[in-house]
Length: 452
Picture 1 (cartoon, rainbow, N blue to C red):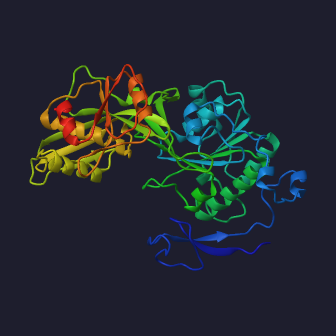
Picture 2 (picture 1 turned 90 degrees about the vertical axis):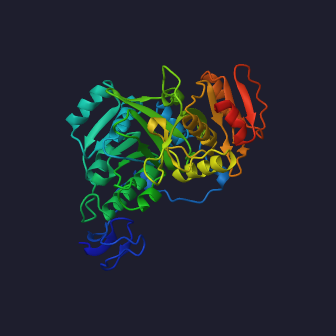
Picture 3 (picture 1 turned 30 degrees about the horizontal axis):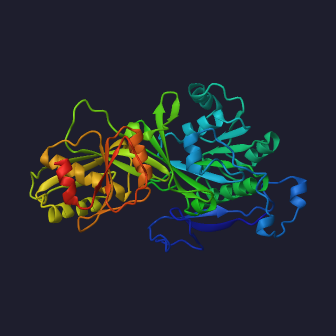
C-alpha cells in the first residue's frame, strides 16, 4: 500500500507548501492554505490500447509531421466555431467558465445534441432524467449523445473505453474526484489530478474534451491557476442573467485568435446564434433622441455597430459624477478634458453618464469619436441623425486619429443602411462606395458643425 502523504495547498493559486502558514507567498492571500491528504498512484489511471502503449515516441522533423489526417471537428455552431478558430482540434482540452445560471450547461448540451459524432456528456451535477427534460426542450432528436452521471474518473474512463466516443463533455471539472487522491472534490489536488488524467486520455486518443468550470466571486476560474495553463483553450461565457444576450469570449486559445466574439440569445428553447449582432445592439426608436451615437467597432475579425448613450446634466452636489458602463472610465475623463480644453465646452461642473447598450464591454479606441458625439449631443440637447455613425480615435490634442481596418467598418455601416460615416482624414481609403458618404475630419472642432 502506498504511503499517505500530507501536503498543504493554497486554495487560491494552488501553491504547495510542506507545512501550514498564515499567508501564501505567491498570491499574498491570508488563511487560504489548507491541509490535504495526497496518495500517489502506483499505476497509470488511463490505459491506452496495447499497441499504442508499446509504441515509444521518437523525435521527428517538423516537416515530417502529418496533420492532414486530423482536421478540425465542425461543431455545427457558427458562433462557437468562430471563437475556437474554425472548430474543435482533435485531442484538445477546452475549458468553459461562467457565472452560475448563465447557460454553460445549456450551451454544451445543445452543442452535443446537434453534433453528428458520437458524444459522451458526463454530468456530476444533474441526474439523467433532469438532463433528459432539458434536452427535450432544446433539441428532442439527439441520437448520437450519450448521458452519463458519474463523478469518479476511474468509472468514467471505463465507460469511455466501452463506448469509444468522438467527443467528451465534462460538467463540471470541480465535481470530479479520483481514488488516487484522498481529498474532497473541488480541492486543488483533485482538480489537478483529474485534469491531468483527462489530458493524458485526450492526447493519447486524439479525443477532444470539453470541460465546464465554476468561477469564483471575482470572476476567475475556480481552483488553481495552473488549471488554465494545463488546458488548450479557455472560454468565458458572459452576460447578465437579467438580459437575454450572452457573449462567448476566448481568454486563451493555442489554436486560434483570442479576439473573436460569439453572441447568443437566451430563449425558452435554448441559445440562439446571433449572426448579425449589429441589429440587436442598436435600439429601435420612434423619434430622434439626444445623447445617442452609433460607433463602428471591431471584435476580432467581426465588425459591429454599437450604440453609445450619454447623459450630461447639471451636478446637484458639489462634486460632479463620472460614470461609464461598458467603457473605460479613465478614458471618459480624458475625452471630457479634451472637450474642455480644445473645444471650449464647460463640462467640469456637470454630471456625465455613459452607457454602451447591449451589456457588452468595448475597449476599441475607434469608439472615441462616437463617445464625444454623444456627449456633445446630450450637452446641447440636439439629436444626432439616425443614419450617422462614427469610427475614429481622439487624441489628447483634439486630433482625430486613424483606426485599423476602416474599410471593413465602412462596409458594415453601408450594409446596415447608414448614409454617412465620420472617419479620420489621415485614413487611407481606397474603397469606392455608392450608398454611403465617408466624411473625413481632422479635429474635434470639425465634428461640432455636424453634431451641434
